[in-house]
Image (cartoon, rainbow, N blue to C red; front, side, top):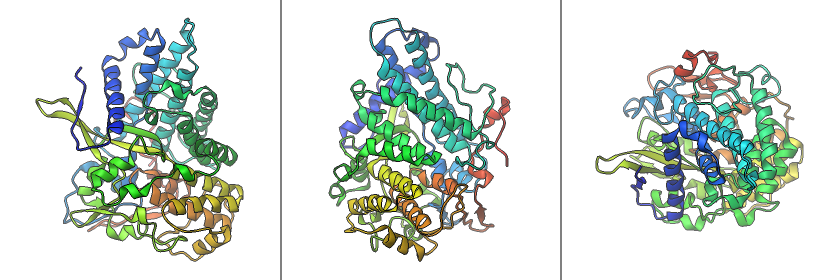
Amino acid sequence: MKRPILHTTCKFTLLLSGALVLFSSCNKFLDEMPDNRTELDNPEKITQILVSAYPYLASDMQELMSDNVTDYGRSVDIYSDKFEEAYLFQEITNESHDSPAYVWENNYKAIASANHALKAIAEYQGAEDLSAQKGEALICRAYAHFVLCNTFCQAYNPQSSTTDLGIPYVTEPEETVFVERERGTVAGVYEMIAKDIEEALPLIDDNLYTQPKFHFTKKAAHAFAAQFYLYYGKYDLAIANANEAIGEDPTSLFRNWDLFTGTSSTEYANAFNSTEEAANIFMVGFTSTHLRFRYGRYIHTFQLQSEVGRSQGPWGSQLEPYAIAYVYSSRSYFMPNMTEYFMYTDIANGIGYPYIVVVAYTTEKTILNRAEAYALSGDYELAARDLNYFYRQAGANTSLSAQEISDYYESANSLIKKPLAPRFTLAAGMQTNLVHACLHARRIATILDGTRLEDLKRYGIAYTHAVDGASNIEIEPYDKRLAIQLPKSVTAAGMEPNPR
């Protein structure tokens, strides 16, 4: 198979070479599945199979379903049915890039790769120590299930997750991802994810990787664990893992925003996604047309900018690096923290596929996860400390106390402070206000990557999708539609669909 060639003006060769190696290796392996998996008889082959154990994210569907997007109006073409279906909370019928079928199938393929590696490791009789490979396989398996659970299930919470439908947690090698299985519960899935994380963390060895930013290094694994335990309500573990990922004081690990001044949108995206950027902890590349939604009807508008990148906060008028907005056709505003690349599989005939790189874990995201965990633990001054770290990395000159941040959000307007209805204990006053501060900052820092929908689900935040020429769509707390429907091919095979 020919090595794919990148069609882009990218100047960051380290980013692209890493993505190329991963894509070409993964495609080669998938082309040979499943017959050659029985040949995993040496450390090199086992290490190689783990390249294909990394996930496919649901950024496109999640962003379109969130309150970061609105309807510009019928005068603009939808560009793609999948964008409209996601925005309108309809069943997504498309089965290509970014669809439920694509996310489901590719994540279970990743899980299958991890499970084949684990089986081969268990059976290996050689003298080499394969602990590092085992650690990578376990953390990849945990993360892919985490992605699937966040996509196709309700958010974890102590009230309903023992009955909310989960997704099959697969721990044995399979040759097909569309087998009839019991879904279990969200609580059951989280228990299994925690088990895999706990077993994986001591085993991970960064020396295994030649492209570390695209792999679960120790820092990346701990950043994932911090987010997972935050969602799981185990705040001490979230804090401890965040500390392992970024240290107590992450000042030296933040992004150098000076590099972004005066750049084009492509240059900005390449700088943001550079493998040399200290703030980038874990990067995921996958086939996607996600960014094309900005060419259509359902977009991030200038009005929405006042809730996100150009919003006021305890820091003042706006956080300058996030207020940088590039505009398409005078209507679609976007922070170019990612860009679309194209990889040819047949250069002569112009055949290939688009892909994007998402920085799944950054210093910014991890400090905000830790701040939220501190707030929910009642350690308010430490939550304020971490929020100040975030504000200052974006150029604000703040040393705000927990009380000062709380006072700001006590009287903040509904654009940045939507009512919370979590299914876990949240004290009124300072604790709630500091959580609002974390949610506000995270919405700004993670624009485009789909994280906002996860916060809307976790905190039971009601919101509206305006629809030009029709009734608005009202999304209530824990709306059944927030759990994306399983692919038809999966339910047709006998798996229980999500309730509607």
